[in-house]
Figure (cartoon, rainbow, N blue to C red):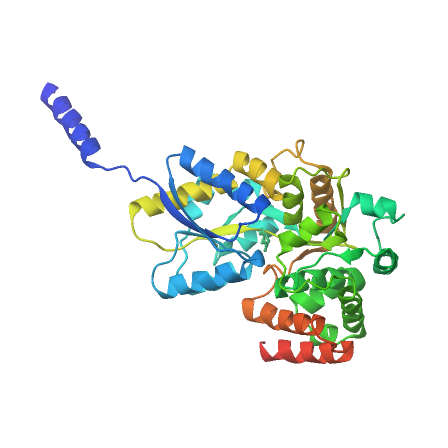
Length: 414
Ligand code: GAL
């Protein structure tokens, strides 16, 4: 009896001594390089380090993530994928179909994700029934940001219709002020375009045109009116808009060089990182019209070898959906937590508006995925639309021609 106990204890000790505990490691590819973004991703790095992890940073600058996605393809093709990648929308399922994503269902189940995530968002994180990505936040895309002082000095209220916006822009131009801070990069053109589609067409039209890719909607008079409005907006930007990064456009509003910016609420992260206060220094409002365009950031884990890397992936996934990260990260990032059980008490008025309007738009059927931020369509399809939007914005193409081109471009990638 004594001998048996002794033998068992010795065996247990030996097992302890020989089992090396994997130290979590992760190389993380992301495109969060602006002031507010860097501050936000630092929260995840810190939590990962505090939990014993070693983080290898792979930031790829470029708003909207186009450059990051090019870097990702090169890494996967060379058989050396990073462990964790900022990836979202249908691109998650596209990569899963390539057979290169890990199944993170064990972490999701252990941490009860199904109980704390809205179903629509959880569905974006699943591939053939398995959890294959961890959601970070809910960004809203259809926002308009304004310099409060410029609006007050010029007797302008936050526009609630596109006509009001156009009238405000004329007034500002007459006063020698640039109405719209914009960066001429394709994804930024697409961001503005989709808010106009929602505003002028409404939720049902947005769904038909930019989610279902219905040729009738794409070729309609409503779509012509959208391009007419884009032409007006082109006249509201300054001469140096071409190629400008989005955060520099935000800085123009901050510094009083322009009145408005149409951009998702990562722009709020920039205002906050610069110490600006919503309601005092800057204003936020949804772009004219009804509805809510959501953009959920998430991370997917790529197949990698090694227990330490697998441990790193599991730890990262757990932290990302954890309540403490969800709160602190989103306070910095400008978005709202994706978990339904995180209190918004410490969040500002823009975040409260976002949360309330997300709930109301979900009830009335106007909660829609952002096409410009990869939530609605596969890459080839959204790329075809964006090519037309940007070609129109940067030329004197007529709305009639733009609409014809749009119908043809989408048909070619169906
Ligand atoms: C979005 C992304 C945001 C923000 C923005 C600008 O696509 O979801 O988190 O980073 O691009 O880079």
